[in-house]
Amino acid sequence: MALNQTTIGARLSRLAGRLDLYNFGRWLVLALVIGVVAGLGAATLTWSVDGVASLLQHRVVGFDAPGHGMTGSETWHPAARPWLLLLVLPAAGLLVGLIVTTFAPEAEGHGTDAVINAYHRKGALLRPRIIPIKLVASALTIGSGGSAGREGPVAHISAGFASYLSQLLRLPTLDRRILVICGMAAGVGGMFRAPLGAALFAIEVLYSENDYESEALIPAIMSSIVAYVVNASLTGWHPIFRTDIEQFTTPRELVSYLVLGIVLAVVGQVYVKVFYGMRDEVFARLPVPRLVKPAIGGLLVALLALVVPQVMSGGYGWLQLTLDGALPFKVLLLLLPAKILATSFTISSGGSGGVFAPSLVIGGVTGAVFAAAAERLAPGFAPATSACVLVGMGGFFAGVAKVPIASLIMVAEMSGSYLLLVPLMLVCSVTFLLMRGVSIYEAQVPTRIDSPAHIGELQLDVLERLKVSDVLDTGAELVTVAPGTPFQRVLEIVAETDQHAFPVTDEAGLVVGLFSVTDVRRMMASPDVWSVLVAWDLSVAASSMAYLELDDDLHTAVRRFTAFRHENLPVLTSPPPSAPVGMLSYQRVLEAYDDEIHRLQTEHLGDLAG
Image (cartoon, rainbow, N blue to C red; front, side):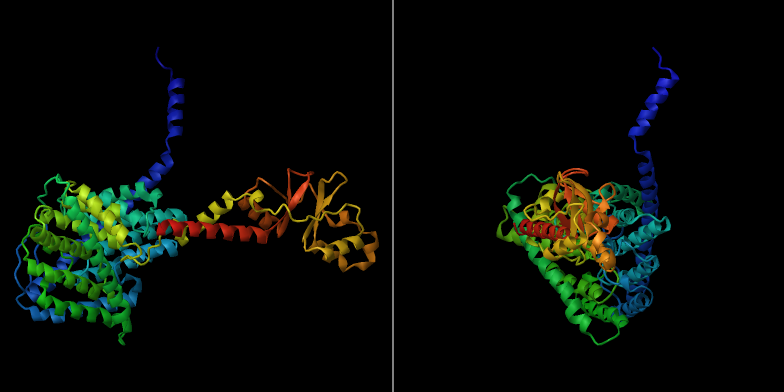
């Protein structure tokens, strides 16, 4: 029997009611806009860096760095005029310092940390001017040969646009935070052609322990996909690295990968200590203007590059050669500490660039050195060099950035292969666990409970989980007053107790009213009426008085304290008239809240220690 139009209409109405079309459409549009801008930003930054590199490194210095994957030639030759590096890098650093200190001091450094800090502590507010300033400063820093990557700048730029968009649309703070995460995911996903890994990175990098901004995952994935499509359409669809990896099928190699994870954790500890030690103990103490420090960092990188030219720029071309086994072992041994120093010189001095690319290089080179050593010491357990390089890349960044899940997915996407997923999972887990408490992103907080961004949610959650019955001292003496009690006797009662509010009860013991010490003090100014006053005259009738019940949560209690401007409320067994069971003070609620927070923190620290 055919369905009539009324039945079809009713079913369609029910279907529409089940679909949250409003939120779907809203987040789809916002994700689309952010993704398009982030994809264009990634492409613009890529072209800008390549343009500056072509001018300064190729034409001026006469140096051609190798390409990576399928993006360029993997051949290279020494610089024709290497001494010009001593002029180019400091000059670019000085220009970066001038631009950053003049227009946007927050544009210095590796970008991602600034976004993390804004998310937790600044309501996800980023100044719009960060977009052009970060773009120009990063292009100069990386293009001139500074040891830095593009992920931090593009994350900062895209998150800055997302923050600006949310302010234009007057979105609430919660939505702005989600959009900033979307911006960060879109920028990274577009730049590195790793949409899933970038989305996981954006929700994972905010915390140094196992916690995530899970509510932002789906919008972040949507933004990352759009940015990936836009950037890849402009710059190419191929993965970042070209690899020839075989499927992991040898369980005994896991022993070697376990040792590799330990080695990566040790190198990661050194990297972070050198990075921030250089900033705090060297550049921060230099008696020179702030704008000059990036130039000094550039000079130090130039001196290092005269000996080890592989330290310049992001280093993906050198990483591709490492994957191909084309760099000699001696060069790899030199490149490992040199890249750590060059990255510290560049970014810790105030240069603008990310730490993702240098971290991958350091991890990949560590993997290559380890593979060579394992082949000599235990050839039966040694994985292939290319496998160790890829696993080293993911494991190292997982440890130093506290993003174990994102790292293994991003490396798989950047290499176009999931064949090493098992060893990647093992090594990423090992480095993450061994490097607890050490991170290249110092703005991270351990978990959501430690984030200022979630303090309001935490307060509400804590207050709602506690009941009045949990904190009320039912054993304390409760002083009640009969309605006809003379005022003189009321004065004596108030003087004999520390109680601040007094329920007025009838002969059956039921509350019919309430008065406070303030009400008593008000009448003390009129002694001529004392003789005719009774307790009932001081009280508020039960029908309009504020009270609490045993099953009320403490959030309700705080709202009652605030609404009625009382610091003490009677607790009743049911709505009045009913029997009182005690008095609850605002101070007691605060103490209970503080005790619960302390308990949660102790429990949290115990979990971390365990």
